[in-house]
Amino acid sequence: MVVAYAVTELLWRILGPATTALIDSPVLSFVVSHRVGWLTATMRQITRLGNEGLLLVVVVIAGSVLRRRTGSWRPLLILVAIAVGGVTIERVLKLVIARPRPPSRWMVVFESGWSFPSGHATRSAAVYGGMACLTARLRAFGQRTQLMVWGLAIVLSFLIGISRVYLGVHWPTDVVGGWILAAGWLWIVLLITGFMSETILRRDVLVHEIEVTPKAGSS
Image 1 (cartoon, one colour):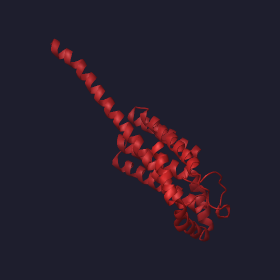
Image 2 (tube, one colour):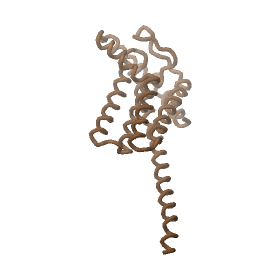
Image 3 (cartoon, helix red, strand yellow):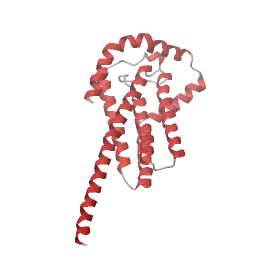
Image 4 (tube, rainbow, N blue to C red):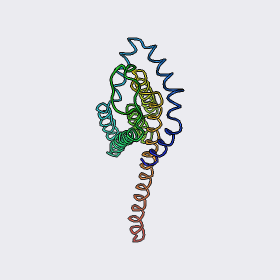
């Protein structure tokens, strides 16, 4: 969190105002002026896939399925850590950066609070991406299923982030920042849990060798 705060604060102070003027405002203005009814209704539904309640259900279901396939609760605990950590870091950075949201006249649905990073983009990319990463790492399913899970995670994360811009509740860089934050947090969690798994495996091998060696000597 300290690293995320320092890097984000530095980048925001350097690029924030210029980014809003040169990128965010023109892009969002273009999107607002080209909305169509059926797409707006679709985006309203898509953005709900990034709600905290639904993502909690996804974590429980995905963790339970992986538990049945692997016989361990560790995948569920890792998914919970990914979700909780992502939400925590995102909320802290929002308070630190304190970036205002786009004008309310551009919003299809009203949202309050600070804008950067997008909570929906961060949470969805972290949870759906974590689900895909664990499925691939644990090899709990065949290669085709793994590819399907990866494809679903990428498409959902992308569409949820785009929906936040389309609905006018976030600037484009809020969404990109959320994706980057989620990717960084996923990398940290998977790196730590991978190291822990290797450590546990080495310990189990060492214990097994210690138990076997006396038996071999006594024979």
